[in-house]
Image (cartoon, rainbow, N blue to C red; front, top):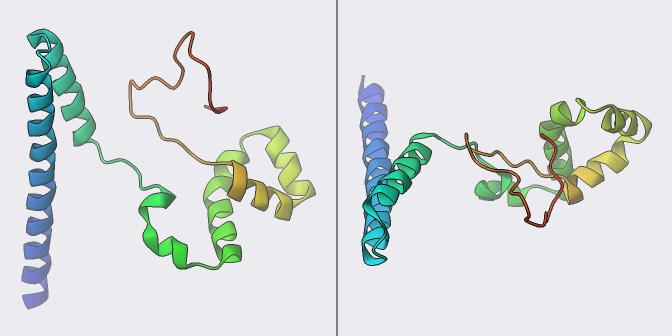
Length: 137
């Protein structure tokens, strides 16, 4: 019974902290828009867009998990490869390379492959803008 109450109290505190951080971000955004005299209709669109983004929980990325830095290089290579493997197997070329030389592909994943999750309605490509990276959708 005490454990349930403690878990519930901790969840409520976490919820309050997240809500407070969300409200602080929106307050700073509103101040920024006001100070820069942004047109009210554009400001409302920007605020709505930000509120929608804040409402969605983003997937954790490797850089957001400091404990992973404590892993040995080989274990970290293996972990990253396992996480990326299902996506890589969708492509015949990667499937072939994985089957031919798995250790080489593990190293390539560690050094050259990363996943980027784009929020809904976000632009991965913008016309007339040079590309800094290659994306596979």
